[in-house]
Image (cartoon, rainbow, N blue to C red; front, side, top):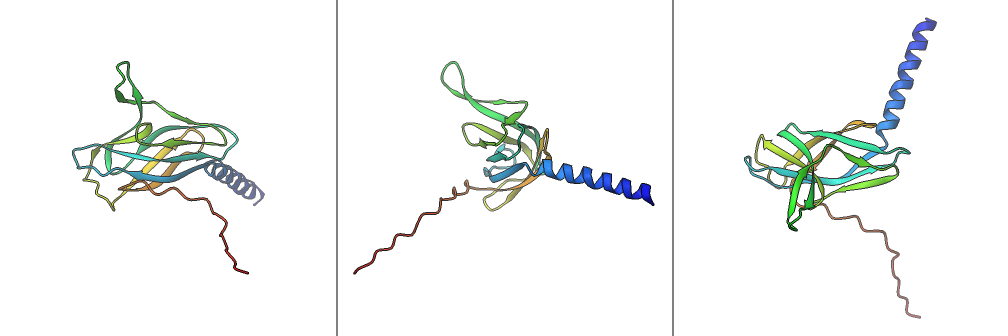
Length: 158
């Protein structure tokens, strides 16, 4: 009986440690561009690393795309903007990376169906530390940024 208790305790510690690592990456405000079935789409959002160590986005996958790649848009020698594939995206500790049009982003190729506004793209992102994380990306325009709370202004007549 004692050995089973020890095994269960070890499993609990491993699962708990794994969960604690995964909780250090948060995926916020993700969305995807509308696209026809034969036209690639792209996904954007914010990756927040609340952990004490940097983490690295290694790959992405989606059941709605035959191929998913990490990309960045850069200016070439002639001044034209050009997309290029990147192997990974490092998210520094206690910091965030914004995936946005004209910058770092996730490309979705060989779509299984057209992506229309109102649809949702399921994305899985694999991080070196946090492992696989899933996020649902609404298709359409980017979500509005959250506004900071402002003090209400009261005007009194005396």
